[in-house]
Image (cartoon, rainbow, N blue to C red; front, top):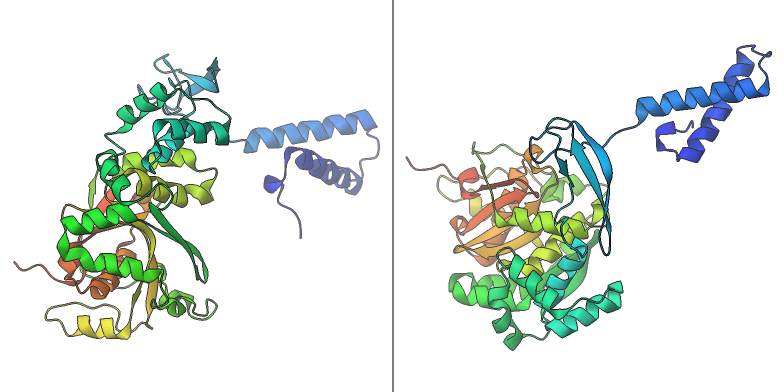
Length: 394
């Protein structure tokens, strides 16, 4: 099979063009070209190809939102080098990096926040960062970071109480679930305890989350044959007709947390985990991530017999399974969140509605106690799953 030149490295691309142009010259009957001329010909063709296919990063000026920008040198910090840009429209200089006026890299700052919020004191936090990253950070600097980010990392108001319940070693529970593919289920013990005590009607949620790690949870139903009926059983793959609703677009703290957490992701595959971990450790409402849920035939029967209820899954094979990205208790509601890169182009209403239907039955709670949302670092869209399957009374 012929290789796609776009997928090759620069050195491989030159070799690719050398071979292809040599064949071209031989097949076209051009025999009078000397070796220097052949090399020049190949070089010109390679240069033309790279000029046509090179892609420039679309750097936007924060002042005038123009994309007519160019690189203008670099600024050296104590521990990093920052690329500077100039806007040709307004002539202003800027750097696209978040927190570019900091001495320390942003990922070091975020790791320090997470380490502290897991229960370590300032000295222990500094020692852990020094051991992992070979950077010595003064205690006063870490303290300043905590004050600066406390409006976003709101776990600070629960931290003192949390340490009375859990030590830094066991404040988080983690288990890898072998559900066709591995899912790392995690929950925050202290927040789960606080928030279910503040909302006693959600006490069944604590029991459900604790049950997941036991042998009483039906993990076997998540190990279906992925070749034959994956699309029939995975909530994320199902599409169905439902009542017409409009998701509300708004700004949410999840956007700010996601924007920070993405600085901890080494690649695109790490984005989900980075955001889940950062929210679980640093906000005051996220209680669990990668929570497995399932909708059985019995659950379907319950919804079918509810008056005025529109149940759209009559023709689908049960159990239907899924894993909730982020689970929160906030404003006296259970919030089911799903991180979607480029959220403005997604609309996972069916997926999130199934998650709500399933968890509603497992907790024996009415559906009006649930709210769903999908988000990225700049957009947040939310809706009530009840409005998807139950018509509003006019």
